[in-house]
Each structure stands twice: as C-alpha cells, then as structure tokens.
Length: 214
View 1: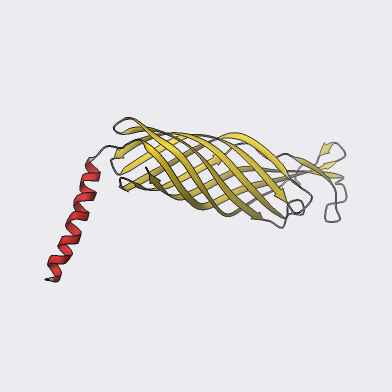
View 2: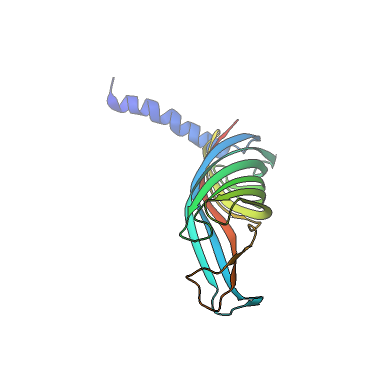
C-alpha cells in the first residue's frame, strides 16, 4: 500500500473527529481527574517583650512545594456554552522548612468546589468559582498537628480536544489560616524578646490536571 495513502487513511478520520468536536456543544457528565502542581505558603513570626509587640522584628517567609491530587465531580451544562462545575478533590503537599517551629509540615487538603464555566470555543473554556476547604496538617517540630477550614476561590481554563478528555490549568486560593501559636524565646533571639507568635497563612495552589468525562 502507498505510504501517503495509509497516512491519509489515519489522519483524515482523526481530523474529522476533532473538527466535529469543535462544532459540538458541551455535554453534562461525570468528571474524574488528577492534578499536579505547586503550592505556596507564607509564615509570619511576631516578637514580644512580655505583652508588647516589638516593632521591626517581624519575620515573614514564603516557601513552596510540589503538590498532587485527585478529583471527582459533575459538569452540568444549562446552556450549550455555559456550565456549573461541582466537584470535590483531595490534594497532598509537604513543605520542608528550616523553621524551628514547623520543620517538615505535611498537609492533607479536602476541597469542595463550585465553578461557573463559559466555553469561549467548543474546545476552550474558562471558569471562575469558589471553594470550601478542610486542611489537616502535621509537623515534626513544636508546631504540632492542626486543622483549619475556610472559603477561597478558583480561576482557570480548560482545553477539550476530545469529548471525553480535558486538560485543565487552575489557580486556587485556600482560605482558612492555620492556628497561631505562641512560643518562648530561644538562644537565637535578641535579648529583649521574651516570646514570639508564629502563624502559617496565604496558601495558594497552581495546578495542571487531566480530566476524563463520562
């Protein structure tokens, strides 16, 4: 068989499938997927002399780490190009920091998300929405085990080259700062410091995922 003919026999049906998918409207369905990406977290330390905060000694840091997760949900198309995305997901992240309070801190993050999606093109959509998260954290230093919950937001885009396949990019803010904790001074602190207050805050995620629709 002629090589060019055999290539055409493969490429033409594939091109036609993609073309007709471009012309078709979105469909409601169950969505399962996996994500990888980067999480960032901020820490803040305030220093005190008895009950008085010492100005100029505040210590702020930001650190980041790889994160991964899974999701399960449903896309409900109420118009050909508009949908509501309702889904839950679990993600895991572990931050390694030289902070004397936290050391390595691991987080299990359970999130319920509700997004509005608008398909700019049948194969390209954008979404924005909110989330409610529950976070369990564990530390191998004095910060210990903690939990928190809060409301945040999602924004992102979806590329759907096939009816059953999506590639998703998402930026997410997780609300609910972990509890503040008070610690006594240590040998590295200035002499006028009697105690310090430590907190973890401003948790963001930058995620890339693959979804399958049924």
